[in-house]
Image (cartoon, helix red, strand yellow):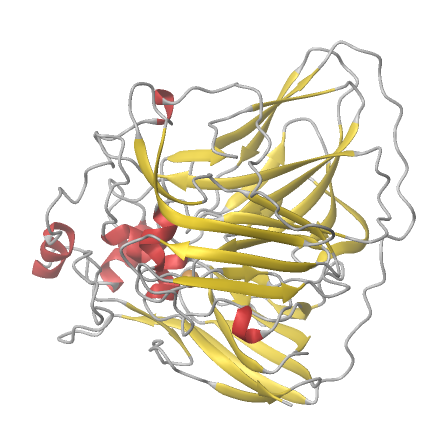
Length: 508
Ligand SMILES: [Cu+2]
């Protein structure tokens, strides 16, 4: 064990204490470790099959816009040969797609056939707060709800949707409940001749029967990472492109806790967009860290050599996970997808316009706020184990915003529509956290490293989720354009569930 791991473990009371024994053996019915050692392994799933496009939700709108009815229900899917896995899906489809154009109206009628409440949060869409699927707007088990909204102009980009009920969220995400919401710009600066491939990354941990394995303590501590990493529901699918072809990879990290440190062998990545749409101009990168909740739009020019294979990798990244090494997924390289060049003619390079869009600074803030992210382990209290649903083996940990663990109804801040806000967000904990704000996009304006030096970000971008490393501080600027209660939280799903969430109430 490395010294750092020892310190982490001992700081949390995991070493040589009765608590450690209790913490790791107190699971209810199933073996707490099922799925970790004896469940389905990656090699039980086929790989190198042609990349599938995302399944679409049926559009029943008669003219422009999007309208659908869908069930949210357990559905059997065939991931492993000769076995069926029960996942919880939208309309029976794994990570389905809704595609619209900015300005379109959208209507989604939902029938919740799960045995527990859910909501649909439209992550990245700047819509009315009462349609945002926040934890206080539950669709109870067996009930229906229709979400109606218009996607505002200027909200083009790759967004997504997922459940957001407090106390049930981690279980629903662990069962793969998520979808993709692509908003095309009315006038696209990127030539249509450039092919675009949507990639959604999810992960799963399945037991011996190929069913979703229950979460164990390290999952709650660190954010659950399944050992089966899927792209569009497939293990390491294969994407064929022409030699020299310029193409886009538009990716969503829909995992509960898995960080993706993206690298494409022998290729540069040109980042052209983030959560909130295009950058001003492409940024060349060797690698890109895509944390849970984030999206990226990458432009790639394929090698001109024919019949070659290149792997899109997620490289090891130390985000400060804790727990006994045997139970904590190590930092290892995952192959997400294999790029294969064909044997046809070499395609000429495609030029992008010099400027994709303007990203104007928001100006000096009228309101300043401070948000500290931290954690504690209340000894002698059953902190973090409240609620109706907690036979699920959570450790007695709490993850906190400004020293508070979320309870339904909590409002931390009051604000006004149209004001420039600056939030100084400080990660006072020992692990990384992806910080997400609903209802708006923000610009990171300053970043402080652990030595205390401030610097500007390398490029301007609109984001709704940003990673803060341990002891990092950032200043985010944003404007809320709509009244209502907007959630903000860590996007490691288990941290959010264990308290790292609150809300801001915006009024006219
Ligand atoms: Cu977190």
